[in-house]
Amino acid sequence: MAFGKNLALFLSAAGVALLAIAFLPSFNPFWSSWRKGRQVAEMVVLNATIYTSDASLPFAAAMAVRDGRILGIGNYSTIQGFIGDGTHKLNLNGKVVLPGFIDSHVHLIFGGLQLMRVKVGGIRNKEDFVSKVEEAVKEKSPGQWILGGGWNIDLWGGGYPEASWLDGISPQNPVWLSRMDGHMGVANSLALKIAGITRDTLDPVGGAITKNSNGEPNGLLVDSAMKLVLSKIPEVSVDETRAALFLANRHALLHGVTAMVDMGRFFPGASVEDSWQDLSEVYEWADSLGKMMARVYLFFPMATWSQLAELIREKGRRLSQWIYLGGVKAFADGSLGSNSALFHEPYEDDPSNNGIQIVDIDWLANATLHSDKSGLQVAIHAIGDKANDMVLDMYRSVISVNGVRDRRFRIEHAQHLLPSTASRFGQETVIPSVQPDHMLDDAGAAEKKIGTKRALEGSYIFQSLLDGGAPLAFGSDWPVTDINPLRAIKTAIYRKPPGWDHAWIPTERISLDDALKAHTISAAHACFLDQELGSLSPGKYADFVVLPANSWAEFAQNPSDFVSATYVNGKQAYPF
Ligand SMILES: *[C@@H]1O[C@H](CO)[C@@H](O)[C@H](O)[C@H]1NC(C)=O
Ligand SMILES: *[C@@H]1O[C@H](CO)[C@@H](O)[C@H](O)[C@H]1NC(C)=O
Ligand SMILES: *[C@@H]1O[C@H](CO)[C@@H](O)[C@H](O)[C@H]1NC(C)=O
Figure 1 (cartoon, rainbow, N blue to C red):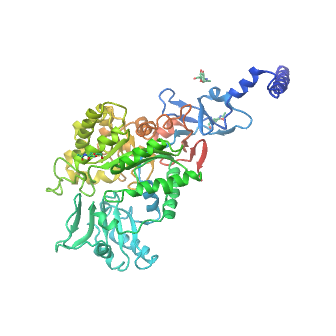
Figure 2 (cartoon, protein in one colour):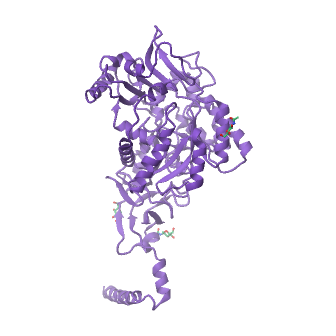
Figure 3 (cartoon, helix red, strand yellow):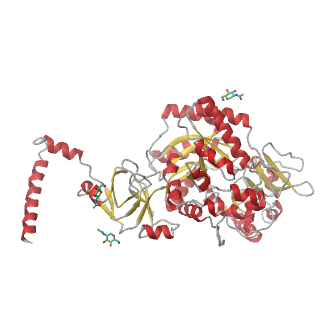
């Protein structure tokens, strides 16, 4: 006791002496340089169960943050030296911390706009579908468009929605409601009329106008045929788009997502200008006002590759810590739900149809060659087995011309593969950018559409992709499925759609560790941000989430699908 008291006295005397020296910086050059070199943390996380996604230190208990970046991470003694008088201490009492999630594939502004529109996602019958639209009509004046989407007929088990469902309730307002995958939509008769679609209109290349038995268009438009209606919808105002960004960002932070790869507002047939307008009018505008809340890595339509190459030459890839110019995206095929994903063999439920090749392969190869030569990252949407093989072959030929380099070609979705194709991703270092939660919608339908053998051998074969050495990256495709990385991780490790008592293709379940990596460090790798993000490592941004679980064992046994808090740059971003 006495010794302790003496020690305390001695320490405080020493402290006063040191303080005196510290206030005379010229007196002792060694001391002043030491003070300058000592980094005092703005905040430290203490007593946490930190999963780092960094193989050199998989778990840690404490982390120090300054200027938005991680100063040090390890145990208490690793970070103790960073604690100063002003350091904020966040004691988490053992709670689990993960790196902020990176969503590898979203349509951010489109998702934000959908949050403001008619929501027909999750609807389970025709009556509810119709009454949702009816409610929306009441709030509009005649002539205004009723827009929305998210419908999925598998949920109501009946036929496709048709113009006739909507004509009675919306005679004076044109209606356009896209299917959840955005590759198909239903218009009412007024919208068809405005679009000039009649019984004589031919299917455009890369699309289909569905007709009833009398040869009249029934309201359903697939892929590029959607453009006929989309081109008539008045442009969304800049104010609406900006509001959509803020809503979308809050929605992402609520689910622990701190960085997103934005594939743009475009769907096949939509305007390529949207992505460019969003860059200048929305993202750069928000950034200039300090209003960005999450980081974005942007892809642009491949047709505009030279514009992007030019911009990057001028400004670099990193516009700020919030906005990164990524690369270019194109489509090879459509979607399974719309029977437009491209397969080697025909659809089981549609024997004359192999799907739709959305793009001219020679154009795609040439545009990829030039984009790649300019140093742009290339991402191509491919869902069916034939589309995936076609894109992999095309990538191989581009590499043989342009030479080997770290280019990180991506295939978006890679959903249905020939079993022999899985290993090509690893061998050829092509990134499969996949969306586990699409499985929740497809597990029931895939066998009907492509037959049991094909469905069970090649659908969402994540473990096979990992076995082949593929750098698997996870995303949501929001608003096609909701942004929710923790739910996607659960889906990937259990493969159990709601209401199922068994896993769908149990051999393709992956480990929790692999699933977490796919939503953090591998997702960062997939967008060239692995030096900045994706793991909790010294020097990287302090973007992290806190989970409700009190221990790793608790989390691993039953992963929650929500976060308690989200931090960006070491600052609490959610709860708002
Ligand atoms: C803290 O971490 C350091 C560096 O890894 C290690 O040397 C030390 O033994 C650890 N201390 C405790 C108490 O675990
Ligand atoms: C760390 O958290 C555990 C679990 O809640 C708690 O028992 C312990 O007292 C905490 N330690 C410190 C130093 O806060
Ligand atoms: C390939 O792309 C380049 C650059 O856009 C263009 O100049 C050229 O005409 C294209 N070649 C073919 C065969 O389409």
